[in-house]
Length: 403
Image 1 (cartoon, rainbow, N blue to C red):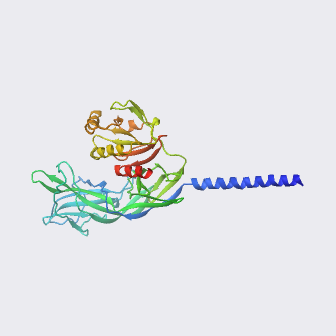
Image 2 (tube, rainbow, N blue to C red):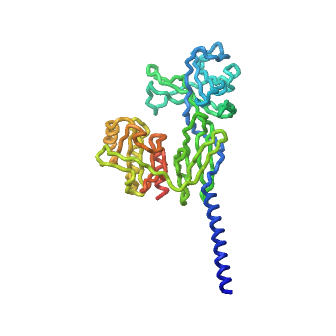
Image 3 (tube, rainbow, N blue to C red):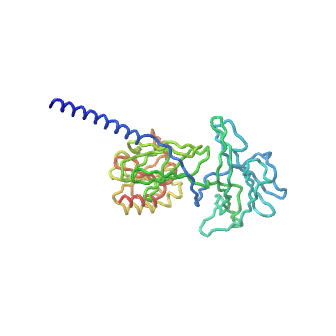
């Protein structure tokens, strides 16, 4: 009888172990399976005019319906097609006509892609005024208050198949400064912004995660996301790993499905590491990112040619003073060592500074790349990348939140 019970217990243990193994396997797989998340549109008010139109130089360009009274007109275009596709249709190039009509500055946009503007709306442009806060220079283009929302449906060819994609844009017309008359005038350059941003909301445990990015066009393969956790905004690129607050869970956005407006989110086991080394240019000796001493270190990527970088250096200096336990390393990219050292000495930056001629030289044998200047990487003692920011204010919010 005793032997029977012992055998029964052993048998039950094996059965329980078998069930536990299946549960663990299922749980692990369910956690690590990549998941597609649909993105939804959200309206924005702070339009980011990142897409310029390009002037059409061909004077024989087939475009009809221009009013007879219109003078000084010039054509430009925004292309929706990918250069890799051999099939390009008329409905993949948005044509813009800028000129003067009855002494008014106007713009006409061929929204239906038929290259006939007689049926398209003529937008009158308001008079331009100078701002006392801007030191104008005739070299630069300046944005205006013009905001023209348009809805189009363009042709998109992928793998030989034709798709018709609806899209909403906002158009602005740029201006230039005339030093002789001390006035602004409209240039023939138009720029475009997406009308929407794309948003993803996902729940991980008790955490509500909000990820946003700009809408995209077919040729735009630079995907930059903003991760919002507890009011702290972290910048992400495709394949960047991010950790969920108050948990050990780590994810990355693996793919972006342009046609269906969705992203593939994947669980991973560890954060990315940053790897670079070199001699400092301001007498701090040799630096290696694998030998960080602080629990958190800010690695500040900047350039002597970058105005926002230089403008924010005093803020970064003050932030370093207020967070003494946080390490700080400066890395200037492109430009010359002499130009970087001039700024370092003028602002009296007292932390190690390295300089690299190119980004490729900086991240040799690494897939890491910088998408904007300035950039601030928050790195752990094990040189794991904890967060990325393009705003010094977001860095401060992150540090205050972690404190």
